[in-house]
Image 1: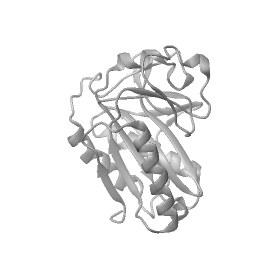
Image 2: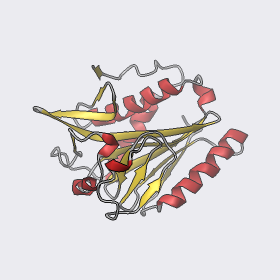
Image 3: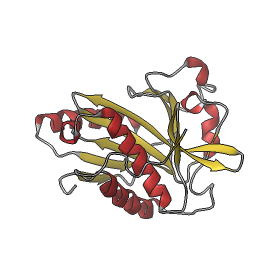
Image 4: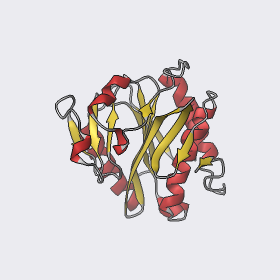
Length: 221
């Protein structure tokens, strides 16, 4: 894990700038001229469309800028108060198994949420991490990755304290019957610097080279 570079951006990063950086870094990782990287950042308010996005799910196209992300998934929101972790890793070092990689991303999110006594769960047929609020289920984290020649980019986003009203302009991930939530919405105030410490600790716990893939991942079917 010490070979992975961690980058934290304090200011809001324009989406086009992030895409260009990830593309360039992925090539460098593949060519062996740069280290793998985890980049923690926030974006200004915007919507991104994954490769499975449906036009009807963009409810308010003029609310925020909309970008074609090139990753898997459908429409999602990014904005201040949401911790985004772009994950640029060489999957050839990790068994060349994309499914196991996604399971590890899920396990990473679930473990960091557990540090705040939040039980994150996955649901079959629904991408991301969910929590139960009584009779209701809300999404607290999204996953959208792209892998090019076995180097990953894009990654995960976890709602720490975003404006949840900003999700109103889309059908998040194409799922209309469920809501969205955040740590603060669950009554757990936390700063991004504090959250980043737990995020890194959980990453190292889950992504051990000799660890069991997805071994701490609870799945409710």
